[in-house]
Each structure stands twice: as structure tokens, then as C-alpha cells.
Image 1 (cartoon, helix red, strand yellow):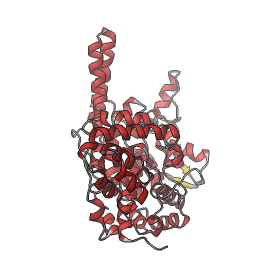
Image 2 (tube, rainbow, N blue to C red):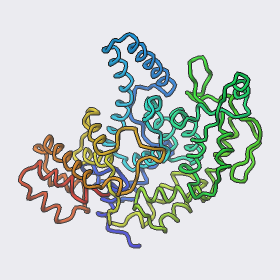
Image 3 (cartoon, helix red, strand yellow):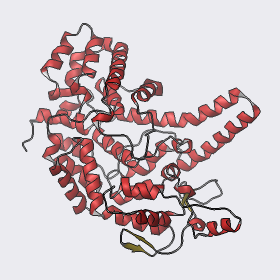
Length: 459
């Protein structure tokens, strides 16, 4: 497959591999588009949004204090105290998401940022649970971003042991049927149950995939191996961060998962299962297809999937090597833009196009809610959909137009829409869209036309 010219490659590098071009970015990539992308790959991982420095353990402690304050305010019937406590609980979530959006709009390495966001969505946690919401931002900073270009095994273990994942999928409450805690509960006439949620999602979504050859028995055995993986509940409990292995809830004995036996007990039993899952060919195949579908097409070229799978297997799952293989793959440089931007991508690329950032969450939050992608709240462990059909319904397009018109009305008068169009799309800017922007009756109208053009809506 022949590659397009350097001008088109530069436009593709910024708008498909990245999160949209900032002013001057496409020109900066023209001399060596592939090299420009590869320079963004770093063993140190992805960039961290600015936060207040508190880790998950500190945030969970603050969350529990806020919950106590909320309960006290409800008992006392003090509406102002209740509002203050609820505001404190929401503030961390809002600030984390705004910091992430500001990083996305400002970064000069937006391929690195897109790559990190892909893995955050692959290992989804959702703020649909309040306790998980309080550490959803910390989950990305502690489990995903530092491991975004390292061995897949590292990001798998880091995400699976993070308190956000353990609370979201109820792993923290899972108890082995033959564990010490279960035995004590049984003597008191109570039952403590095994929870299979996280084990199932690791197999189905994070590693081998739904067609990866596992059975219900494998899910149950893996769930038994994971018993004990929990979260510290108070400062007196010794924990690594907020992760705590509870020996008393761990199911004793050997486990067999997908034909392999794991004899060691304790925390290392589940880690050994994850290490094997990370190296299975089915995991390489599942993740390679998902990467190709995210970056290139809803139905990705088989040749591209094969290249990524080969890179995965030959490098023992090194994500930096897979990222380089994606950049080198000619199929990734097809000029036809088939991927439709998610609402978050649309908003971030809009801010990037004019070279600025949102200053407050209310500049992006309500629009994301309206478009169906609320902050840190994917609807299920599958994460946000990558497919056009999820985001391109007529009603959704009307809402995008409403945002584009309102945004352009606020900022358009002081901008040159023709310059923005060239800077945002480069060689991807078609003659009809360039003419429509040039002939618009006003600058705000011209900017709105650009933002709603097929070239800008797709990548």
C-alpha cells in the first residue's frame, strides 16, 4: 500500500493518531510524520494531569469523611451542611476530569495522550459508583499512564489491583467459600459469597476476549484465585497504597485456569494467572484488533491487525513496540477518514484547533452529558464505544451543531476561520469545506461550519 504525501501524512498524524491539531502542529510534523509520532513514545509512560498530589489511599480516606459528613448533615436536617459535604465529594472528580481535559487540549504529544486514553478505556472503571468516582482520576494516574508503554502484564496487574477496579467490580467484597472468613461467617449463620465480576471482565474484556477459549469453570477458578484482593478500609490497616491482600478471605488450594495449574497460595496466585493471560496469543489477537479498530476503522484491515499481533507476540506484549508497529503500518495511513469522533474527542479537538483550553468543567461537562459521554462515567465495563453508530445519530449531530454554534459565537469574532481551518486539517481540508468557510457571512458562522464539517467530525 502506497503512503500518501508528507503533507497528508502530517495531517493524519495530528488528527488520527493524535487528538486534533493545535495551531502550527501539522507544519511541525511535515518533515517526518512517523518520526514525530515515534518521538512521543516513552518508556516512562504517558503524561500525568496536574492534581493536588493526593493518592488513592488519601482520596478514599477523604471520601469516607465526606460520607460521614453527609450522613451527619442528613440526620441533623441541615441543608447547607449537606450541600457543602456533597460539593466536597464532587470537587475531586470535577477537578480530575478538568485537569485531564486541559492536558488533552494543551499537550504537544497528543498521540501519547490518545494511547493512554485508549488503555484507560480498555481497562474501564466507572464513576457510576460514588466510591469509584472518587478515585477514577487517580486510577488513570496510578495504574494506566505510568504503564502505557511498558509490558502488557504490568498494566494488567496494576489496573486489576487498583482500588478503583476492586470497588467498581465488587472484588473487594469477594470471599473464598472455604476461606477463614467464610468459615467464621457460617458458624454464625451468615454466608459470605464469591464474586466473579472482575475475573470475568479480565478474561472477556481485558485479555483473551469473549472468543478466547475460556469457560465458566475458568471464570470461577480465577475468581477463587483473586479472593483476598481488596482495599484498606482505615489507616490502621497496612496496605500498599490502598490495595490490601486479605489472607483470611483468600480461597486456599490449587487453581486450574484455562488448562494451567497454579499451586502457589496468596496474592501471587492471581498474579501468576494474569502473567499467563498476558502472554496468550488470544490476548495479542484481541488487543491488536481493538487497537486497530480504535485508531483506523470500525472494521479494521486484517493486515493491520496481523501486524500488531505479530509485534505483540515478538516483543512479549511490550506496548511501546506495538505502538511503533501501528505507526509503521501502511494501513494506518489510508487518507480516508472512517473514524467518527466521540463527544470527548470532538470537544478536545475543538479547543485544540483554536489553541486554548477549557478553564472550568462547566465549559465541557454539560455538553458531554448532553452528547452521552459524561465525565468518568462509561455505562459498563466495556467502556465507551469506538463505533460510529454509537455517536452519529441525527439527534446527536443536532446537539453537536448546537455546541459548535454556541462555541463559535463566544470565540469566533477574534479568530480567522480560514487560518484555523488550514491549521486544524492541513491537507485533509477539502476544497468544498474551504470555500464554505471562506464564504460564510460571519467569522462565528465560518468557525461553526468548520467544526461541523465531515473532515473535522472524522479522523
